[in-house]
Length: 147
Image (cartoon, rainbow, N blue to C red):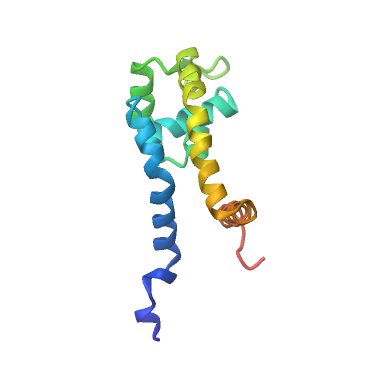
């Protein structure tokens, strides 16, 4: 088999996209019920976990481009899920934190989200699930893949 005719079933980018869709489909259903996008959910989860952050750090943690994050933050602020204020030390910078309403939203849906992931974990087997997470986290590290 030539390089040109490799099967898409052995393509890492395609396999990652397929796996992402398998994982995200039930999450999207949960989020649709509360009127959030998956990107908005990721931002809220990051803020809930990490605390108040600058937009640049939110974008990095939530795997978003900064221009997209700007629009997402605007929507989340309109829905009163986040609070924004100027940095006390540098008024040009902005600090974003999750609001009490945002925290309540996370708490109200975190069990459902965790149950969905636990179902995938049980279907795969806990060892394989943990190994997959370890491998994906290793792949995403900023280092030379050859070691």
